[in-house]
Image (cartoon, rainbow, N blue to C red; front, side):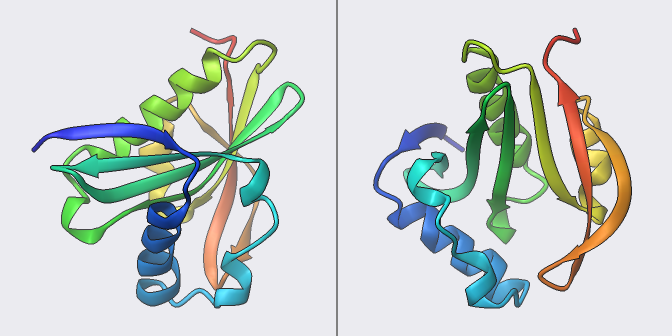
Length: 143
């Protein structure tokens, strides 16, 4: 399995992945998936053997960054692709001057996954698109 993760400006692959997982598989209403934040975001796409297989969106707001819209196509779940995608996102965020904190909204079944990277769940759970979530944070100043 040959994997490469790229920052993309053409959002066709990222949008196709998000449509396949969020809208078609998880049945999130289309109106809730698309927003006006894509234009100002950093988009990463993971390619497996040349085909798009995962994506993540990075949003910057001063010293805080947010990782969101993370998807991995079903055939690639459990292969480590998601971990590589998050590791790449964190590496890119650590390289940006002034970014000291990262947040994300994790589907509750993925709390342990993000916890392996040092993210800590905060606050109460909430519903996002009909799926239970928790806010998680990571201090980039920590080792």
